[in-house]
Structures are given as structure tokens and as C-alpha cells.
Image 1 (tube, rainbow, N blue to C red):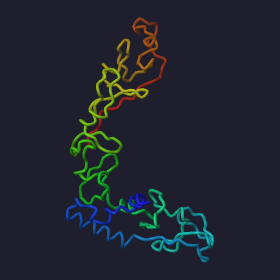
Image 2: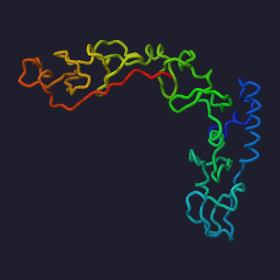
Image 3: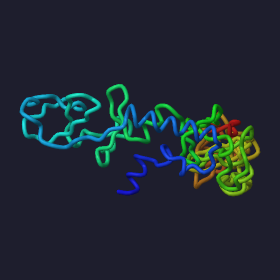
Image 4: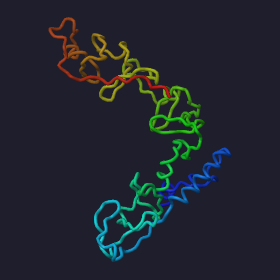
Length: 267
């Protein structure tokens, strides 16, 4: 429960004591932001039976009608409306609001976390709101500029190439040494700056010397291929051990093809 409460109501969103790294101007902005939210949006739902005058009123979320005496929840900031207890949840994450604490915006209720994110981006590294004019955006997430670092060695990645690992950036050096898949042909890691071909869960450098027929060495990029005992071939005849140049047919009946991925983009 405590973990869920901290997730819904991050203390760093309203108390500068949980944000020791903030500059004084950021602290001022956080104080003003928190005060405005408490004044304009914060409320606590009231649980109780639906009163007689509200018999037949629709639930604000699902629209199903509530009868007199049914358990319901009201929210004073949103007028004379009622919710089913299971419907009193955040508009974005759909989680039930613990202790019925809500923030309202444009007639909708939110948990504290997602209400704050309507107005300020949140750093994917430190989980604090960003009050700087500048931040780094990558893969749909945002970071304080000083927090956009390699997940392994902490080297700053602003303006550098990187690879995303489980939603976190990794420098090319750490990726190559720790995460790069080995090429099935040459055995060397397929680095972040290399094109990669994959087929049936296996990996190759996309270059002609590696991603080619195991018998005749014909490059396979962009061409049909077939597999036999984990090896790649350009045709059925090559997979049976006959040189394609001397076979009656050199066209594979297989429609299999490999997926080729380009090097990781710049940040």
C-alpha cells in the first residue's frame, strides 16, 4: 500500500525536501506549482450511500445509474456527481485512488502523479518534475540534461550516440561490451554502429561476408533464404550440399527473409 501511495502521490512533486539537487529558481517554481495544485485541484472523495434525491443519477465515469442507498463516492470539486467506488480512479492510469485523494482537471479526476504530468515533464531518471526550460527527449521520455547518462558507466550522453536498453540509454561502448549479440558467422559482437540481420532468433552482421549462403557464399541481404540445421542457404540445392552454379535450379522455394536493422540513431 505504501508503495502504491508513493506512486500515486510522489512526495517530490510537492515538497522540495525530497529534491536536494534543485537550484533556488527551481525550488521557487516547485513551491508555486505545488501551492497552485493544492488550491485549485486537490480534493478527497467522500464515500457513503447515494442519497434519495440522487436516486437514478448516472455514475460520472461509466454512466450506469446509481440507486438510493447504493455505495457511492462524491467529489466536492466536481459538483453533485457520484461514482461507483470501482469507478473512482485516475483518468490516465485507471488505478483506484488510494484514500480517495484526487486532483481534478477539466472535469476529470487524476492521481497526483498524472495530474502533475499534465503540466510538467517528469525525468525518467530521478522521477522528479522538470522545471528547467531545457530537457532531453528520447524514445518518448524526458530527462534532466545532467541525468541523461549511460545506465552502466554514467557517462553523459547529451549529443552522443546511444542505444536504449529497457527504456534507459546505454553508451555504444557499454552496449558493445555487455549487450551486443555475437554474429553467427564470425563470432564477433554486432556493435551499436553495425547493421544487423536477424532470422529465427539468430543474429549476423548484415555485411556480405557474414550474412551469406553457407555453401556458395552468395550474399543473402534482400534475397529469399532457407535454413537447414541452423545454417543459412540461398536455395534448396545449396542446403542439400550441391553448388548452386551446377544445380538445375538456383531459386529457393522458401519465402523466408531476414530482418535487417540499421545502426542505432543519434540521440
